[in-house]
Length: 78
Image 1 (cartoon, rainbow, N blue to C red):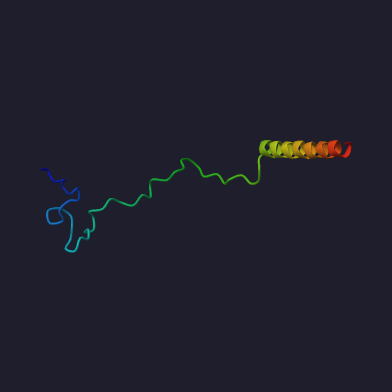
Image 2 (cartoon, one colour):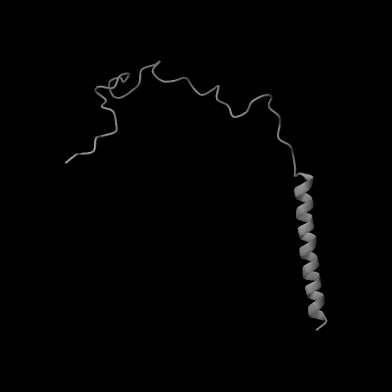
């Protein structure tokens, strides 16, 4: 019967470990300072909403208001 092997490395045979499991200086890679998400000059974000989304939202508000107004008028004429 095969027993599954332990995927963790044996600390006694792993190079670069100090006593107690610490890592000596120079064994770790440098910090990720050069791995930013942006490239090129940084531009400040735009403020406010774009004209397109505002027009769509207001159009939906007007359509809903007209629907409820027409519904109220239809109920009143019965």
